[in-house]
Every structure is written in structure tokens, then in C-alpha cells.
Image (tube, rainbow, N blue to C red; front, top):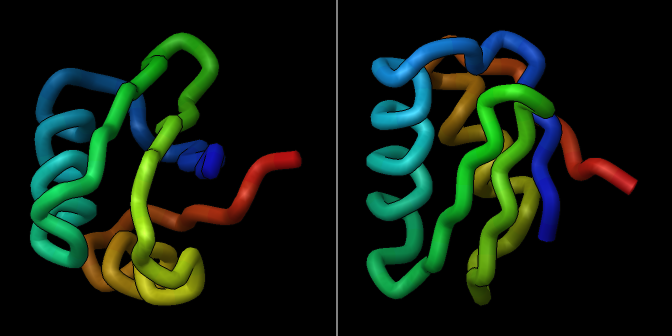
Length: 65
């Protein structure tokens, strides 16, 4: 799945997003593109659960088309 995370803009943001997704699914594979502000995630976790966890960390997120 591809998540759009508009407020993700630096290395610290990238690390928080990766850590948050990994906390929800330790086996998830995450690839971050800071330029596009998206995260490509291979996971079996529910997208709504990941979005909720990211929002709890202060990052608005949504599934990108």
C-alpha cells in the first residue's frame, strides 16, 4: 500500500514513520520517499490502523491512489 504523509519532510520524520509502522507490524517492509512524501508499505496490517497510529504521532496520513 502507498500512504501519503504530507507533513513528513526530514530524516527525523522518516524515522518516526518507520518506527510507528514497525510497531504495528514488525514484519512490515517500509520504503520512504521524502520528496514525494509517501511511504510504500508491504504489510498485512489494516491501513486504518496504520493511519491511526501515524496520526497519534502527529502525522496526517491517507492511502494514496
